[in-house]
Amino acid sequence: MAWDDKFSFRDCPWCGLTNTRLNVKTVNQKFTTRDGADRFWATLGCPSCGNAVLIEHGDPNARYASPIRVVPAGKEAETTIRHLPEDVERYYLGAMRVLRVGVPDAAAVQLRRTLEAAAAHFGIKERVLMKSIEKLIEDGHVTQSFAPVLHHIRAVGNVGAHASDEDVDQATAEGALRFTTQLLRNLFEVPGELEELTKQPMQAALPPAPSGAPAAGGPPSV
Image (cartoon, rainbow, N blue to C red; front, side, top):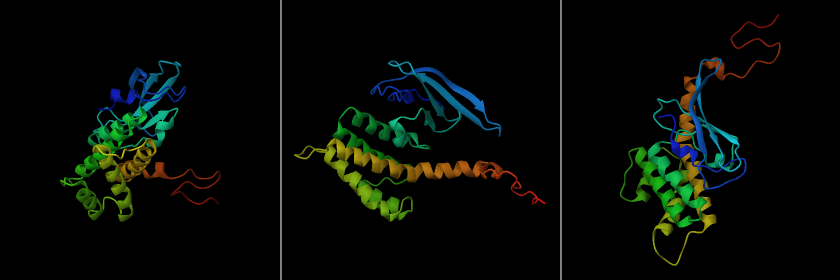
């Protein structure tokens, strides 16, 4: 599935309108590069300022539907993650939605669920999240240096999930979101980008030769 209407629920990068749904005009517009690669775009419009927003999305036959690029890029670019599986993305996007409307406790719980879903995506389904975190590290999905980050997100999520005198404030939830974003990029975006890179022709991956210099693999200038 290339396009999902949930992509239209985003802030306007032009006027800053928040908690809105951009009007979808067209989807699955295909453009082919000179190298023969297909790129797909959707055109949306802001219901307030009327400016257009372009969203590049995956191939219609792609397994996961995630935005690749938003033009112009707004603040959401800081938390956009490519190659994020749908079973993980649903909790991650849910955390951002409730955080945006000022419910940090709920955001903390959704971030904790994001960790659980990320671990489950790798076949790790321990009954206790702490055990799942240890298994993620043990199996080499993330390095030991991520351990404090993972446990911080888990702890913040625990506070948000239980009734007590302690609440999760906006700043704490935003910090947990930043940590979660970095973790998910390490788990999914970096491997996904590397996989795409290996599918590209080697010549396309090389930087252009300086003016007057021989092309890669060509004979030297005489």
